[in-house]
Length: 194
Figure 1 (cartoon, one colour):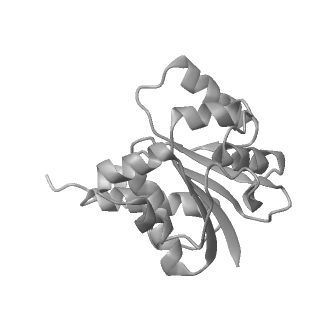
Figure 2 (figure 1 turned 180 degrees about the vertical axis):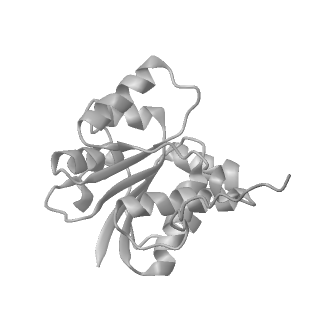
């Protein structure tokens, strides 16, 4: 079974991390290791009226962000990689500068040093120069910056459709089979009747 590390931080968009966990729980393809920052708990409560325990129940293993001695803090812990969904600018900055000041940024640092896939679903707008430089730094180290921008060509009918499409595309980056985002089949142009 594949392992995937998932972190939820305090940026807006807790729904992305939660939907990711829900789908992975249903699929049974992947063992999930979850960390939620204190600010992430606030966002989940405010945006979705969810409690920490409700979200933690979706993961196979839960780690405290303060437990820097957890298994995910070591390169010897084998995993497919890590997704931070959503990723706050604070966490982005910590990862970009290798601070390892909590288990989320330490686990992300491990992914970079072990050359494993690290995806940061950064959530802020507009970006300032510090944000852009931090994103460039993480990209240069091998991380993937994946802002959760909606793909309107799929003609979403709801917020859930948009979240599912983005979540599915992120899972594609890890080679995890999913049914949330259908493959693009191309545009079939038809002549308009005049």
